[in-house]
Amino acid sequence: MGIIISTVNMKGGVGKTTLTVNLATCLAKYHRKRVLVLDLDAQISATLSLMSPHDFAKIRRRKRTLSYLLESIIKPNPHQKLTIEDIIYPDVCEIEALDILPGDIELYDEYLVSEMLHKQANLSESAEFEKVWNNLERDLISKIIAPVIDDYDYIIMDCAPGYNLLTRSGIAASQFYLIPARPEPLSVVGMQLLERRIIKLKASHQHQTGINPTLLGIVFILSGGGLLSRYYNQVMRRVQQDFKPQQLFENSIPMDVNVAKAVDMFMPVAIALPNSSGAKAFIKLTEEFLTKVQAIG
Image (tube, rainbow, N blue to C red; front, side, top):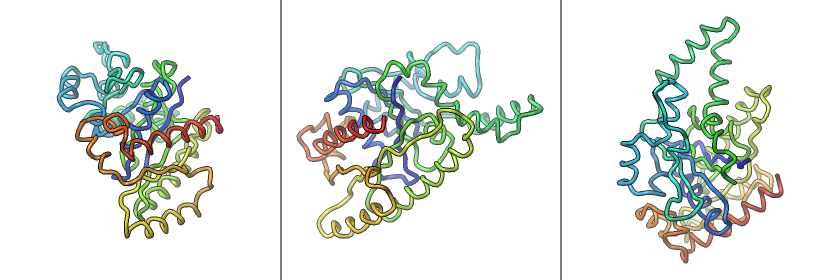
């Protein structure tokens, strides 16, 4: 069974997508792991980091995105014939065993979700709305990936900032979660808020087996250097006081303009510019990641 991991932070712009796609790339390219990237963010940043807008437009016209699978659960239609295997885009960036389940700019209709939940609650005299909601939260992403979970070593989900339904469902489906962070106050606040939310998520599903996501670690994605380095170190020391040493990755990702350049090429920096400092940092981070997973598992 594949190991399911969520990359998440309450704050946006902290490097979630950068971490997700480069970690997935390094696992597939340098460690021969079978990896699926699942884009849960309507900004589709992970999707566009692994394929061009032109390619994405073609698959979206054919309804080969996550949105189709979500709709099949939220509003089942007997005429829907596509499976998750039909929608997964294989061997992205010409890397064997690196696949993506593309996201969409319109993932689901919140009104239809509410309508479905109210109907389910009304049909069952014993079911409260909260219970029906918790069931959807627990099962939504799990049901989608269940048919392919044995096909991969790792399924890594790029979650949206904040704490919407798909992020909660992604965390609930995960064995582990990663927190990318910049050494800046608001990013630190995002980590603290996330930890509180996950405690509540576990409590709401305490009677459900298998829902116990574990923090694999915090990865610092640095956003500056020079005069800022002293300040960044101060913020990082504050984080070190709040978390256990094993919850912090020793390797961080340095400021490297090549990471941004790679995004313009619709490829991870680990592939587009493998000799850059950013790419080398992700390679080392991936080795530490595998060590952590092995130690916990």
